[in-house]
Amino acid sequence: MDRYDVIIVGAGASGVFMSYEMARLDTGARILMIDKGAPLEKRLCPIKKGAKTCLKCEPCHIMNGYGGAGTLSDGKYNITTHFGGDLHNYVGTDTALELMEYVDEVLCSMGGADAKLYSTASSELKTIALRNNLHLLEAKVRHLGTDRNVRILNKMFEYSNSKIETRFYTIIDDVIIEDDGSFTVVTDKGERFNCADLVLATGRSGSKWISSVCDKFGIRQKKNRVDIGVRVELPAEIFRHITDDVYESKIVYKTDKYNDMVRTFCMNPYGEVVAENTNGIVTVNGHSYADPDLRTENTNFALLVSNKFTEPFEDSNEYGESIARLSNMLGGGVLLQRFGDLVKGRRSSARRMEKCFTRPTLQATPGDLSLVIPKRQLDNIIEMIYALDKIAPGTANEDTLLYGVEVKFYNSKVEVDENLQTKIPGLYALGDGSGVTHSLSQASASGVYVARLLADKYGRKE
Image (spheres, rainbow, N blue to C red):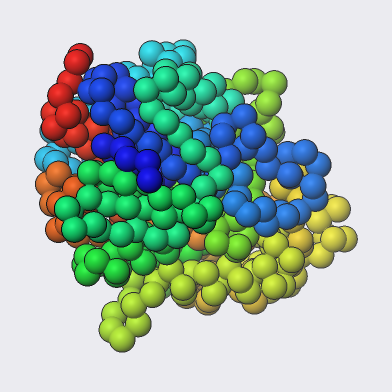
């Protein structure tokens, strides 16, 4: 059985930055990082190669592999504690912001310095939004773009690869605590690896696995919410005055009808809508690029309604999955509907889509989202679109496109202490997989934080 000092499960944002920081601090510790996905150069979605629909690859190249779900995203890092997770509740607000600033410094040193750093703090948009009962959340935003993001991650891998061993295409079937307090992980190939410190950094796609580990060892978990909504796509000109100024506008609205909160999420100027596979369920997301030659004529963003449940129901993620499955059942994948058809109560057909002035960037099945998304959530989304139309006229245009469904699954929040360590000594949970963070910046920062703690244990050579 191979023995290591540290094993990191998951090569997503938190795992990548933890491995980078451990390599930089040069502790001499023997470290292994394991991921069920592919190395960076082999993360190629079949849709990019010409497939008309999601082929439900296992594992999904969009969601898994080096860099995690953030690799092929648009590389948007929000430096803030106002959203994106609760890391500051564990390590302190000042420390959390310092860690996120450090993450930004690393990204810039690896090729991200040319990417503009936006800010919403003193934006005129904030005043305009307030006048229309909309609330713009404050953050600094570094947009790398999908293409630049991949190049940066490749440099980070090259930097840490000589000191950190990485195994791809590997699934962990079991975790065992030995009599001496060490951990043994057993892979799907029958391999056994032992370590003194085990770090669970599986990201969103590993939510069910990390829950099973916690259940096995009696580690408490707090159920989180699930966000359900659509991805909106419209001509980039409509939001240009906003995206050119702040790029990522996190706008929150409280609906009049139900008093529910609706928010914009993951805005991608001149971007494209993409499909992603989470646990066999196809949902939508958005990407955008730094290279002007790769830009489209459209901007896309999500509109999400948060859902929290009371007893006796607990599994909020299952609720979201059931809605996504219904969309997959009716559309064979992603459904697409014109906003004008939705408010008129009619299905978008292939014939109606041929007359649509907004050209979709993802090939999806024309359909009727009202047959999939519950009435309350759909009413909230429609009301939000009309609210956004006041600050970005044209949002409520008939040819605005809605893709469904977009679901943001939040892992159950694992009970950890101020060191992100569970009640089991040496067992850590960080990143989006822990439920503590919900963003690239905070997930990356949590990886740096635990890396420094373990570097102190094993002895820095920095």
